[in-house]
Image 1 (cartoon, rainbow, N blue to C red):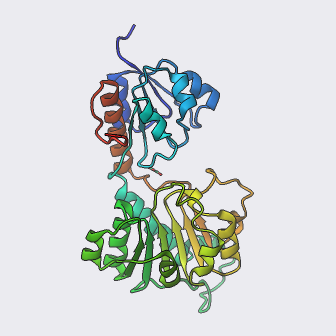
Image 2 (cartoon, protein in one colour):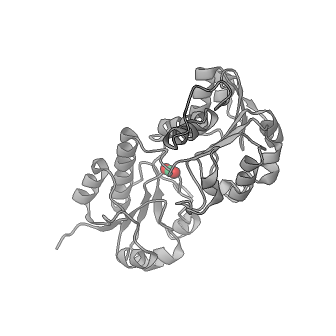
Image 3 (cartoon, rainbow, N blue to C red):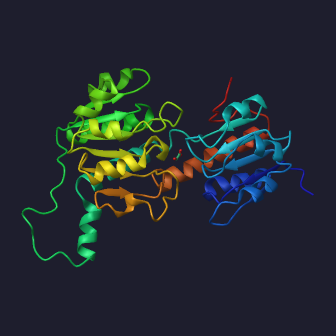
Length: 326
Ligand code: GLV
């Protein structure tokens, strides 16, 4: 019998991290493409010292109880950790780790990709071809949004928001407005970004991109009222979390021409149900939550998640420690 500490890994992650985990612990890896059911998860965590989880797993008091008092660490394979009850983990002395920084550029790139795809109607154009509708070059057809020297409004100016702002300003000389809980002096100095209230951001931006955390203050912040305040030519992009957006309101805004187009990497719920009306709109581009999906990002996330897990079970400080000192 192994004298290594027991861990459960809720999905196969890149070998760059998984190999470390399997050689440094007594690991059971859930290798199915779909997540374990709640019932199976609660059973698999029993007796574990560490868990490596994804956003698909709800990590809460019930799960901590099922695992038992020896549980020392939950290492989330994501920068976000809205799936974890941090307060409860902290109360029980369980360390929580995440994977920041290494997906900043990949996520900012995804926001760019969605902004361009939605603004320049790329997916709609491809569908047009596939539907055999392309008969000739059309001077009046497929007219999209201009980017050069337009205004971008960034909601949440943290690492990813800043990386997106740099791309918009450096690539298209855009004026950058932002809304954030506190001023970001770096982007103000570097890009001339201006901190504004939400109403100003919504009214003046040609592109609105969401990079805020999900929390009680941000859930549902993009509602019917918010979309009504935006320009009818505006492109809306969300690469943060689906629940920040009222999807029904977004549908109405897109359908009624209150805004021009949207690009989403995240929805609520995920996967988006196949009968969701957003899927019927040609001016809405939706990706299946793939913003961190580049080789180097996912490998680096796996390495950090593995380090967090192994450090946690060894009782050491985590490389990326969410509830440090709390
Ligand atoms: C993905 O959404 C992440 O939080 O890493």
